[in-house]
Image (tube, rainbow, N blue to C red; front, top):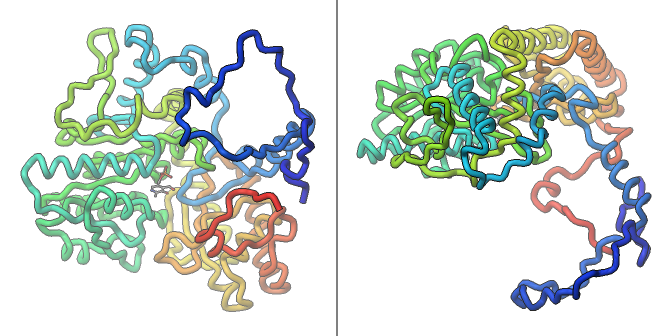
Length: 483
Ligand SMILES: Cc1ncc(COP(=O)(O)O)c(C=O)c1O
């Protein structure tokens, strides 16, 4: 492994020259309170320009993204991000705006903002959107807060519980809990769908609603969604749609028509804006008319030919983000939707579903697929066969995929399938690419049978091999200490 930049430190070597000071040097200790001043040397590495460039170039080659290869990380929709989106979001007239600029000087940006609210409403079947939330989980929080505000506004204070299926993404129960609800888990049936009897049994006047994703986290469409909506609505609750899986239905079916009252959309998954590594996201929250008053403010409005932000929303849950959300991400998603158009959005969904079903079909001879029927944009396999034969686990298979040059699928999620491997190929992969990946998966299945140590000791070609996952999660060491 190459040396760290700290280890290349040579005192007084640096990569910049500054002109002599033209003004007297300021003593910052006068303007910063004593308790905030550093009392130790900062110990940053001092290196030449070429060493700094080599350091960052080397780091960039270690990052794996959709631009470098196939990335079947289920539930994450790691689709290709068209470069025209990046170009548009960097246009000086958009990227250079100041959030305090008067509205008459930002009419173009406001138009994009307003049209984005409208397009999302059209795609999802909702009556209005707020673009403020900065991520999926953040949109969930805002959406569940609107549900809470709705019940409280009706003086229905006894609704203190939120139902969440056992297959849900971890952010769903976490969100409900953060907003102050007690979480009630709803069981899945043996087809991987919401168990209607269990739902009926748990719905009562203390339940504020149900959080659901459709297609669910197993990649399966909740076929009884109208019945589910009826049970929740008849019990006085509201239905929340986790839009992280919207890629599996967009352009074909709308959550609003299925009976959902609130939705968040992960722009950074469904609408081709990059995400991962903690980058900026955007999780707009949309609602049906009964919840419009509670949306986070402000929302963009159009009066005649003029666009403006409306802050006059007395029942709003308030602001959930400074200014207007991650505007750059919103611009990227706007360009994506405009470039594809209604037909293109539908085709993207169809190809995503076709690719997932092709992959599922081609892997079924080599891997166990617990719910092996028509899926939407993703599906679950597991390592049952390999584990029974030679104790090869899902973790081993994921690590071996790294040797073959692929980012592994999502593993050990959802929790209701043991040793799960969740594949989401997305619409942007060609059949040739999928076939290459299938070949790698088949080769690993052969190795697991004939030469299992090759798989159980993988990866062999990665910079870092196996880490102690538990210690890494519980006691992460995220900084380098001088020896
Ligand atoms: C089903 C589901 N819901 C919610 C989220 C949360 O989205 P975000 O990562 O943008 O907070 C994810 C993210 O992986 C997800 O897959």
